[in-house]
Amino acid sequence: MNNMTNIVSDGIRSSNSIVSPAIIYLKKALKLNMSEIMDEILSIKSNNVKLLYSVKACSNSEVIKYLI
Image (cartoon, rainbow, N blue to C red; front, side):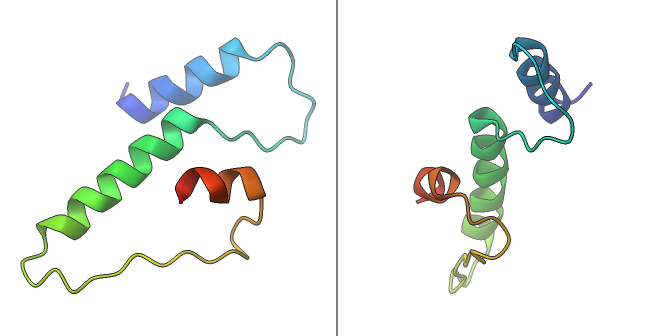
């Protein structure tokens, strides 16, 4: 299994209970995704790239604070 699969599996296993439907935010998963994205952006030689975030995609204030 890849790293993200392990993170998600561990996050679900560590939950006491999940009522379906549910939206689960895992800090480790967000951190891994952002790290991979930032590595890709920094690898671009021109480095004139800006990462923008659509608040409509996820308006959860705790997630936005974490991403900032």
